[in-house]
Length: 234
Image 1 (cartoon, one colour):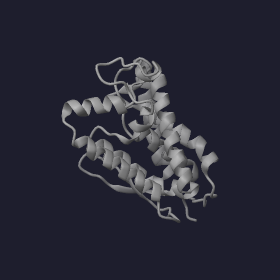
Image 2 (cartoon, helix red, strand yellow):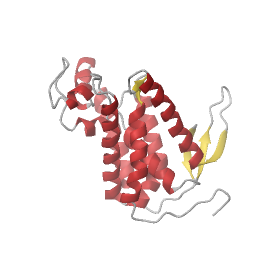
Image 3 (tube, one colour):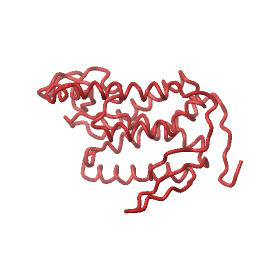
Image 4 (cartoon, helix red, strand yellow):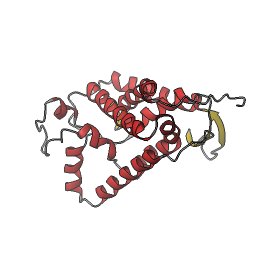
C-alpha cells in the first residue's frame, strides 16, 4: 500500500513538517558530496552504532567513535534516494495533521522523542551490533502511530501495487496504518527469531518502537481535540 493523500484538512501550514523534510534533504545532499571513504566514516560517526553507544563512547570499529547525540543525528541521514523519499513521503502525508493537533513546537519535540525511542528500541534488540543505523523511519513511525489514534477513520487515497495494475482506492487510516504496523510486527518477529533486530538492512523494531511511542505521546503532546471522522461521512 502506498498512501498519497488523506481527506483531513489542516488548519495551519505544517511549518515543522516542512522544515524536517528540508533538513533531511539538506543532510542527504551533503552526503552526496562526500567521496565513498569519507561518507562511510560520516555514517559511522553520526549513525547509531549500538555496541558503541552502550560502551559509552569507546570506538569498537576502525572509524571515529559515534558522536554522543548520534541517536538524534542518525534520524536525519539516509542510505539512498528511495530511503529518503519513502520516509519523507509518509511524513508529508500524515505529518501535517499531527502537527495541527499539537502545534509547531510540541510537534518538533514529539518527533524527536519518537525518533530517540525508536533508536533506543533498536539498540536494545541489537546491543552487540557494530553496524550503523540511519534514517527517519523511527520518528516517522511515531507520526503514524499518533495519526492512527487521532484519525482512525480518515479516508486515505492509496495505491495498491498489483503486478501490472496499480489501482487507487480509498481506505480508512485504521486499515492502511494497521496493515503497515502488522508488517513491522511480522518482520520484527522474524528478526527476533534469528537473533537480530534487522532483516535485509531494515530496523523493524525501531519502527515498532516509534509507532508505539507515537500512540502514547499523542496523549501528552496533543493540545487540540480531534475532529472525529467516520467512514460513512462526517
